[in-house]
Length: 54
Image (cartoon, rainbow, N blue to C red; front, side, top):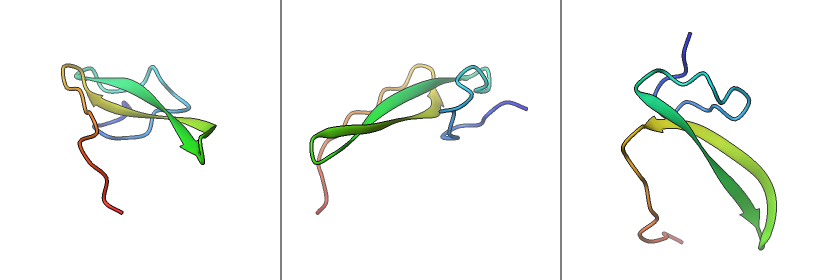
């Protein structure tokens, strides 16, 4: 079974459903890279940060 929209694909990058693709992001804590996490997103959609809520 394929991984649906916004499902995590960190351990199985080739298993997103056909209309999605696995996109990975680096996680930083206090400026130090701690891990890479991946999720299935729409193929033609890009997310960019606009602001932070503290």
